[in-house]
Image 1 (cartoon, rainbow, N blue to C red):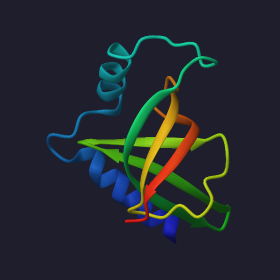
Image 2: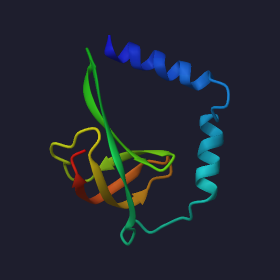
Image 3: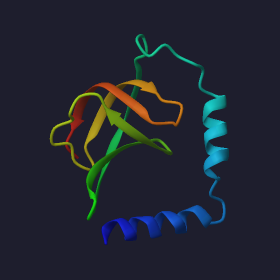
Length: 113
């Protein structure tokens, strides 16, 4: 049931006026981000965390996003983030994947809310 609700919400968001298409957003994002060497990358970002838990009959997963300025950035941790909750402020270091996901190599909790 939860997966169905999330899918419906995402479908509605995709057709709202003024929302850029996924392809347009990806093209814009990739155009302003140079290719990087992942072994040396350590771009710092800071902001609030949004934690979403998807649950369905096929299993569950936890998704993390960093809200920074007017951006919502998908995060993928290389180490378990522990008890990270929505609203916590964190500073992360890592790199962007081609799909726009930010791979977190290190992070620091700045506050819980």
